Length: 331
Image (cartoon, rainbow, N blue to C red; front, side, top):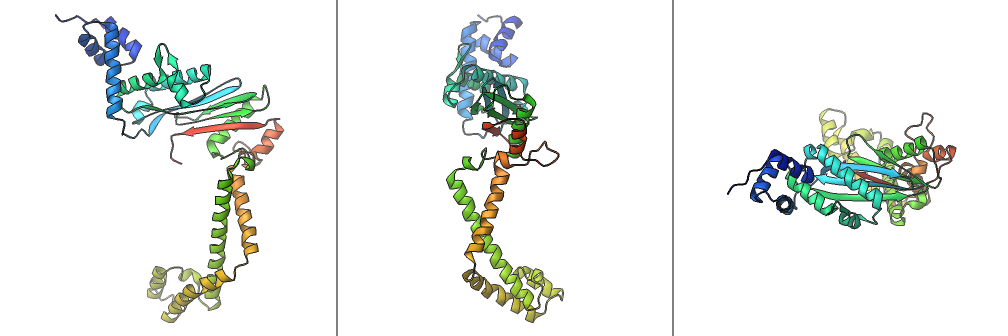
């Protein structure tokens, strides 16, 4: 015997599960009016959809952050499409998970996924939401900071968020929020040079040395070509040499001489490199890398007089102790 499903029943199930009205109606009909059974049907549907779409790419989503006293966190709930990412229910679920993280302060993502919210784990809530949207959904990020003062920043569009921590209690809210915005805008790797991993420092120095050596060799080649009375800008590649001969800007003899110089000078120039000079130039390049990629050395984005973030924090009596940044944007 068919069970009559009322609008009130459907609304009650929708309020509990966030599933679509028709999905709720079908689940109640299949469950013959048994509310808890209908909830289970919808949950299994979510699990089935999540399993079916597990190999899909979830590159969209919602990133939110929140600070509460000495603790601040960021969570990212990912999905497949921008439409679902901007849906009010997706944003609400992300906020619910974030609130749970702030209240319980789990140690890592696995602990957050295991947290219970109204009798269901965060992992189950995400899976059930997948059943509602029909898309792969996953809680991809959970990061946090702790300090005497904390602050959070969410960039417009909910795709980028940051949290920062400071050593000082009752820090100026406007000032620490400015630092959170700096982290969002300039994506520093660390607070200062000491926070950069040694392997990163070694890699950057090796890159700087190789680039400097190549630059010095290129200069030697250009000087040799210029000394021969040929414009080096006309001979920087075989294609340009051919093109400039066709235009009459190079004679065949000049073209041949330029080719010979480009073939012979590099080895001679590399053998004669002044490595002390190369290392000094490379050190300058690495110093520039630190200036661009450490928080205290960066130019403060809100500053009109180009002061560094370090100077800005010193002026406001601030000491940044930690920061985290989560983004879904390709950078």
